[in-house]
Length: 373
Image 1 (cartoon, one colour):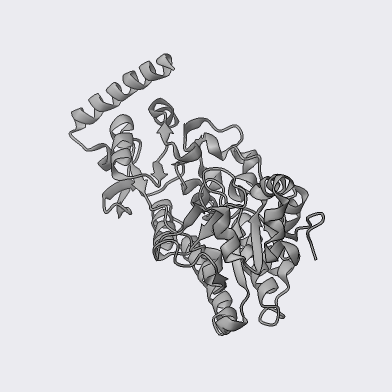
Image 2 (cartoon, helix red, strand yellow; image 1 turned 45 degrees about the vertical axis):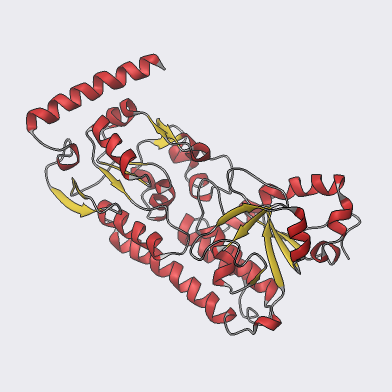
């Protein structure tokens, strides 16, 4: 590590000297560029970048967005979290052969941000894109002399998420693809809402999303609140009101709260299912009090989250859940065909349902010995 730090200091000093000689701010003078353009990033900063971007280093949640924009081939360095072994990290899994030998330039594991200035400098990217805050962005620019464009790590299906895709599209010269991604997402959401919002609340079963994935896997006590997937299919979510409006995420609750909610149907993240089974073996009486377990209405879905939220899996999950909750409203939907359409658009792999199923992470009704009715 001391060698890496020493190298970073030497390289940073060389870059700083060169920049001082030119009298330019690092973000205003991208190395090796001739024609440039100026864009405004999500932090409100004007950043000058090469007019043509061929080499990208994406940090934070931007590798996922870059992949959705069809730019995986332009990535020259990645964080260590992007060496995907799980199909739940779908965007990285489908690009694993392209990215497996790329240099590691930092880490965002478990929310801890680190980056290696000497690696960033040596790869000479046209642009660094990230979902970091202002202090971190400025620090990367100061240490590397490279232009850094920040976008927001926004709530899934939000206008801010769309803005992030558009900024990256503008920077990388793929604005048409960015608009296509935004339009595809909104088209799915509009279809889902049209099918579900007209259903009277009295006709909707109560629903809980548990075994939630946030900072690792959790058992039954980990729940999603203001869950974007539930929002787009207008479910009767028992956690409604737990978090402020506009705030979504995973929350740990007491088992007494889960018993008080006693949802009609429960959806579990794949990564937490085994934890639920282990807990059930130790505390069977608790689960026997839950209507969803007694009636056999517990289902597994692939994790919506894997190093930030996926987009394609939540959209597919919304159609899966909608078909179970409101079969009449979704009677014209072929779930497997719809899933293939979504996965092909985002990942280029229409049969990704099979990939998830082969890993045990697919969509399914769960069976619990001595529990299902």
